[in-house]
Image (cartoon, rainbow, N blue to C red; front, side, top):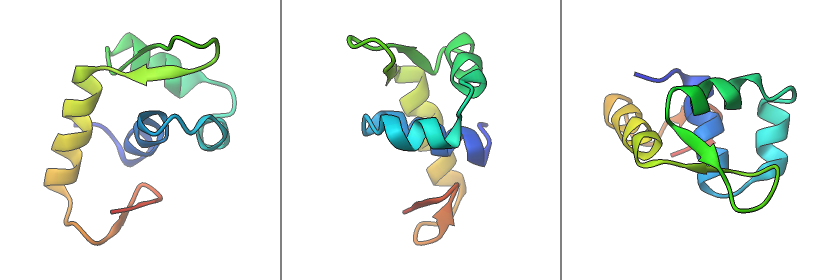
Length: 77
């Protein structure tokens, strides 16, 4: 299962929130790690990532494992 930080970063990219993603991961190492794991793929625009099906499944698994209504990974559910 992904960590809370990974969930937060995937959530930013799921909503094309480049500013939030840059704040969450300023040097880009977490994004590259998630890309190596198959959760992110390069987007159509340079500097953006798109969440893959594996990334969507990882986010869904994380939200199922954590109660709804809590702030998880900085993202209010």
